[in-house]
Amino acid sequence: MYSARCILALALFGFASAQKETQEDPCKLKSRVVGDATYCDRYWECVHGQPELYDCPNGLVFAGKNKGVTEGCDYPWRSNYCDGKQQANSPISNEHCGWLYGIFGHETSCTRYWTCWNGTVTEQFCIGGLLYNEKTHSCDWPENVEGCQKHPLCNEDANGNVPLGKSCNRYWQCQGGYPRLQRCPAMLVFDRHSLRCVVPPTEDCDVPSTIPPPLPQDDDELDNIPQNNPKNKGKGNFPNLPPGAVPIPDKGQNRPRN
Ligand SMILES: *[C@@H]1O[C@H](CO)[C@@H](O)[C@H](O)[C@H]1NC(C)=O
Picture (tube, rainbow, N blue to C red):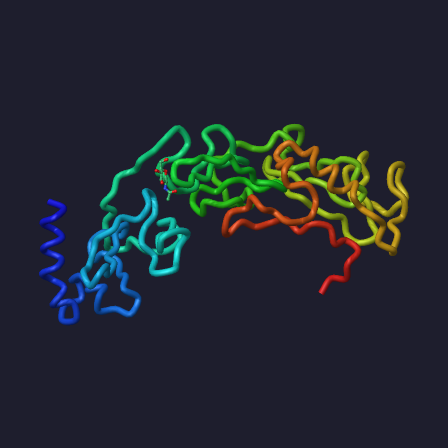
């Protein structure tokens, strides 16, 4: 059946320019590569002057020469690659990966997910109160993630504020059980007794200095948040966020805003 389709496709190459639905000949293209007309996870490459049919790595679909994540192939959800086409290959899965290549939700956690690369699985973490969104395959604001369990930080009061370690400036605001990282307005400090931003001084916090103080303690405190990835210490960069993730702004409370 496979070779029959090859022959059929070869027969159709001649009509490529006349009929839109038929298979283009990669040997007539500058790129020497073209997607299969029927299957979005297959492509044709011109090899020694002859069109040859290739499969994308399992779980990926053809995106175009030098595009996608590997071999011209990409995650299917990143674009409309498969509109009007079928996938020829079926999933090769393991314990956590639905396909050999892909990004998949965690079985029991909304703040974790799996990245799979040729079947090798890596556990990833969403940080800063974000949750894994199955639709976008990335970490996202909790209100965009349906059906996820709420975070234990907000167990006591689903809509209350929660102190963030010893921070005088930052705190968690629970919204329907989902925590959002917040910052007190300039010149105010978070009061752990009234759970509000107040005019300093309080028991724990002095008037904020206008000279930026060294603030390593803020990051140390973030490390105590259970959903925070311990590998992501400080720095304000988020190496584990997949494409499309929304990182929480880090620090900058003494920087001018514009
Ligand atoms: C994927 O894994 C298989 C088996 O583990 C290996 O033979 C193959 O070379 C790998 N492919 C790539 C592109 O790394």
